[in-house]
Length: 308
Image (cartoon, rainbow, N blue to C red; front, side):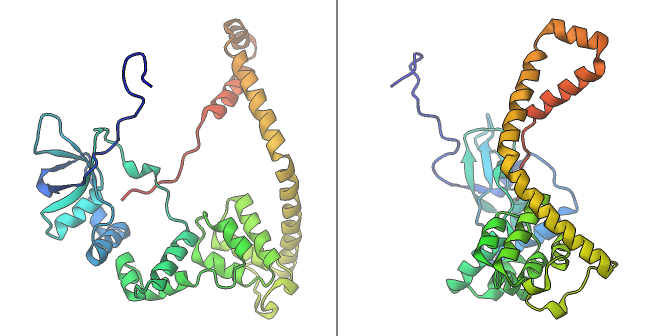
């Protein structure tokens, strides 16, 4: 079926179907990288990866208008810099049909800790040596082994809760010291509720855990600078917090719905010019609050991004 203007329903593809080998000298970057980039950890990791396994993700380019032998680099500035330093003269690229100069990897989230663990585990199971994985990631072999054994002693339910979270490796060490799966799940829920995945917070939850729920109660230490009385108080507060979390979870959906409905009503009120003029003359503080409510409804969530 076609539209009235006789154009097809099918959308045009965003990229050319075939990859293209392009001389690096013909690619024009859209931004200048800082001089500190070659000294960064990110640069070292990308360089190590390209040396060990080659270029995995091709740079994204578009054809320069009016110039058949020139291309605009849309994504992959660091990769291209590494290839230049390695003496490469050409690179295989993905050609975008759009010339929008934005970073395509802005839609890619950073790899979570557990996801990285699963990728390393799968690579090891398929026979990739740990030393080669470490070389490709530019890290020590000992770190690869720690990441490979990340979920040893962690129950499946807690791992599922944290699978998309950016938790430090040492945070899992604190969970591993909790013997009962239920306590590990509770700890994961507390971290998610507080949006705090730091090692210090995980250690605080560990300090507030009953001795009966620990693998080795005798080895438990209170956080530095915290007395036994403060640790006991923290334990009681953690238990109270967890109860409150459950109560809030039960009312979050209906409360959010009421908030959205009320916000949309306020938005409609502000579309009334006479009302807005009245508030401006007599109740400017109320008008300011109304506008903040409407602005809050309009703000989108900003994802965490990584660019390579």
